[in-house]
Length: 86
Image (tube, rainbow, N blue to C red; front, side, top):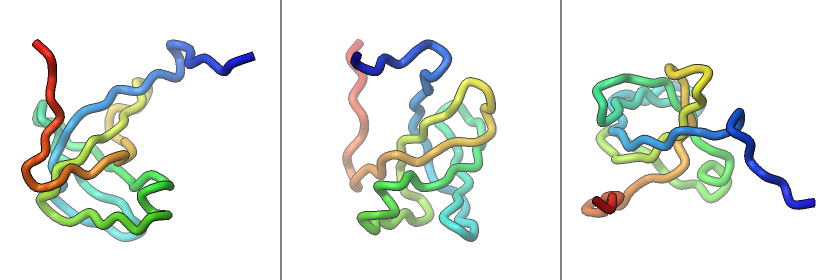
């Protein structure tokens, strides 16, 4: 049977900017909605040595259960931004 994501496991994806680097690949990220979260690098970003620096735009997955912690899943290139269809 194919694995389906239930509503319990759904994550919110929000863009933000890295404002502080912390030990053990943790980062303080300011989201576009002016909230700050403590985020860590996802496993694939660690595996492929994708570097995240201060000021980088990132995509953060946040669990609906703890809105103060998240996982960085993507680092945007300099001029690349996520496009939202309106």
